[in-house]
Image 1 (tube, rainbow, N blue to C red):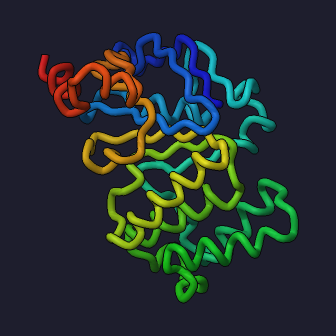
Image 2 (image 1 turned 135 degrees about the vertical axis):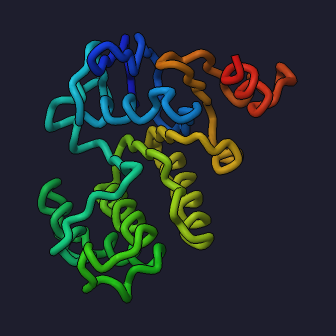
Image 3 (image 1 turned 30 degrees about the horizontal axis):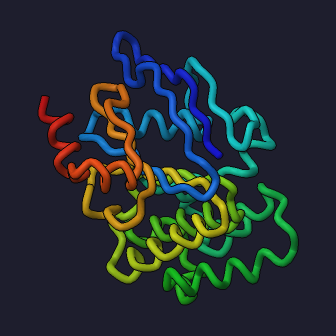
Amino acid sequence: MIHVSNLTKKYGKVLANNDLSFLVENGEIAVLLGPNGAGKSTAIKAIAGLIRFEGHIAIDDLDNKTLDAKRLLGYVPEMPALYELLTVEEHLEFMARAYRLPDDYKQEMEKLLTRFELDDKRKKLGSQLSKGMQQKVSLCCALLIKPKAILFDEPLVGLDPHAIKELKLIIKELKEAGCSVLISTHMLDSVEELWDKTLIMMNGRIEACRTRAEFQAGGETLEELFFRITSK
């Protein structure tokens, strides 16, 4: 579970996040939608514990700043940040050691490398990989720990069609396993078949929160609501 309460973040005089509060339940896929500059990435970074903020954020009732919470959380940033002199395989080994995974993590590592077509790239250095390949490694690192909650910031950008299909399958598998999934994106069509709940941001605030059932009952489409809010 991801629980955000009164999240506020300022950069100087700019209010990037203005009193955000929302919940992503276990086994739920929530999508954070909004145009560029709405504050989505700032919220994701705050949840990941990468920036200071006002308010409170909990991962499975644990303060997100604690090590216990961080061990439960996977994070895929918008821009992959790999170590230039580590190989693909060494990145995953680094994650396994950092999270103190049991020795059988290598079985999961092999599955992920195969699913993202990286098994023949395992000895390549981070500096030798294309943007799309770097994104795949970033995904593998986040998924290797079998997170209880996971954050995706524009995860489909730069991926080839096979990787997009595989990632969408994995996101559904995470939901079935009871993981809380939060996806930040401005690409409506990329997540159309995935979400259970949508949070639409504009100017640092959440302007609408709807479940799929509420959309089905109300008659308005997600696209219609998105453009009604963001065109103000």
